[in-house]
Amino acid sequence: MMMGFGMMGGMLFFWVAIIIFSVLVVKGLFNSGDIRVKDIPNNAKHILEERYARGEITQEQYQTILRDIS
Image (cartoon, rainbow, N blue to C red; front, top):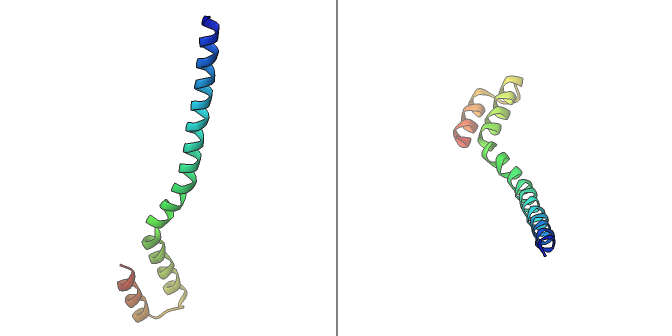
C-alpha cells in the first residue's frame, strides 16, 4: 500500500517538475526580447556617437538626432 503512494508521489513530482521547467523555458524565451527593448536608447546613442566619430554626420546633425532620441 505505501509503495503505491510513493510511486504516485514520484509521478506527481515528475510532472510538476516538467511543467515548471517548461514554463521557465517559455518565459526565458520571451523575456530575452525585453532586455533588448530597454537598451534601445543607449544603443541608439552609441551608434550615433560612432557615426559622428567616423565623420558620417555633421555636428549639427549629431546634436539634432541626439535631441530626438533623448
